[in-house]
Length: 319
Image 1 (tube, one colour):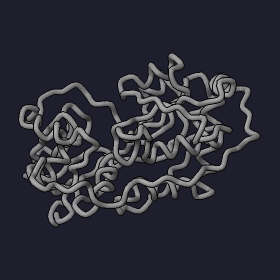
Image 2 (cartoon, helix red, strand yellow):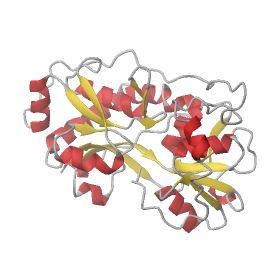
Image 3 (cartoon, one colour):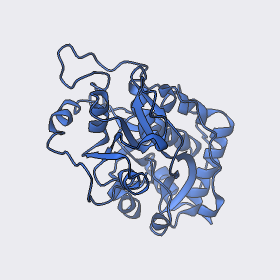
Image 4 (tube, one colour):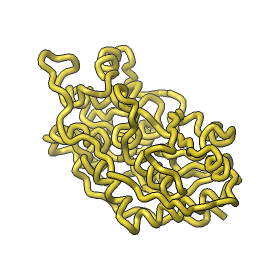
């Protein structure tokens, strides 16, 4: 996903009004299924919970001496993988157990196994904010990064990429009973929420001026206000929206065509092309053996949206 742009010129930036929902959502988004934040008798989130594949087969004979990153990790006996910790369905940390779950986590697990590392014992996850991803890769804080990381020209000047492993696109999250708002062309006159200063918000303002763009400090607050009937839709990358829908499929759904294209890649140190090529091979192999689809099904697939066709890896990224 593109990093949020500096906040500017939103038609309705309601930070003060958002404070109460923000506090209510702080504890693991447990109120996604309720009609009102903190309402009497509020039930916990409904719907299926994120799953985990039993185990990814580890390639015990794998060796990649041409990669300095792999050599160092092999010597240390572990991989350090940068991830997100606050994106339901993609990369989320359980505050009670410390366990990570989501589609990006599954991608991290399966690629680590292909590189010869046991996903259950030889991975250390490090949560890295979007603004710090390039620095973390350049400074060797992480071996590679899997976290809704859109491949673009600016980033390719700073880091290397494997993939893409998923093509995301900006879509709309609406209430399950919504009948009229079925895509971006129906946003005119409707309140559409996104994060303050984000690229998705700016795209709505620029390309769909008839929409009533509403900005809050986080997508979680947008979702809370969607369930409270304060806004009509939430918009950002479909992966993030599918994660919220997976948490509460009885009340939320993702609709419409994508109106952007975000190819997600695995970030690697810029000069370590051997590692990028090995990760490409791992992604291809895991797609062919069904692991990619199974990973989708136990994470984003819980939203009810079928798995898309995986994108082809781009060999030009590793030349």
